[in-house]
Length: 424
Image (cartoon, rainbow, N blue to C red):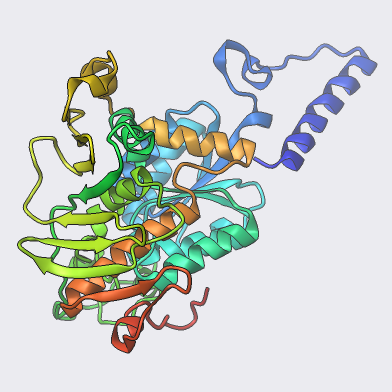
């Protein structure tokens, strides 16, 4: 929430109280307005809008709704059924909620401080950039971009507009992943040699599209808005619940879906949040690999998840190693790495930690754990791995110029044309 908005609201309350005192007229101020009994006064609340809530978004919205200093006043969806359902849910908690079909109408509201973006991946970058230009902060689900060009545009826009951005790679806010990353960062594994990401699937492919169906009325499903920047194609109801154009137009996007989590964790542990590997290799013996300028090796595995749970990562150094995943379990080369702690003390999955980090940064104007630059770099790695897999050859990359060296075909895959009228 901006300091100007806080000041305006505080001024209103103080003015009203002063006027009441001057007139000596008794009045009643509800406790929630004064912040009593744990309530957060309106002047300290973050007013939000929700865009594209469904599936994963339903869960994330619930995490936001648990926070006492959040108030949702609007939601937007191109599908009437979802639009109505989310509006009813928010109105039940907050008393009122306006629903929109066009996100630009929601972003035009001056009373909204921040937005939650959980649409399909095709829309994430465009929505985030448009929201930033409208003066809104945002929590944006992953994947945050579908190609290298979008990744760079996202980071540049957030830097230029000074908006608070949180990418939905929530594992950076979970204790077991934090503990493992700190072992690597603090040199407790010796010199870091290899980091392993495990996205559970490296297949990249293009695909034909389902047969055309009669297009429903725009109020029921706004098909043109649903497609957004993507190339136009005939309506098919199946595509409403399918992720498409994820990762440079490739169905499934190879390592992008879960790679935006586990490759991001490897970048973090290796302290590579400001760069990317300089060499990428296609799949060999079930895994793709990449190499950073300092010799560190990134291995992207492709053989299913291990007993450690979904999204496992492994960090290997010259004197030790650690591996963890969503199960909360940790495997270590030596129990001494625990430094007297019990694994049960570390393992946890507090869903609201990442949301809380975002809200605190909205108030402080600080950098979130997965700010736009962090998201940009980890997604560049995912996209570059995908391109190496798709072209089935070694690629060299310049992480300063953000281009492949001496490979026009690979460079053409860094971005794609945007359908009119959408532009960054």
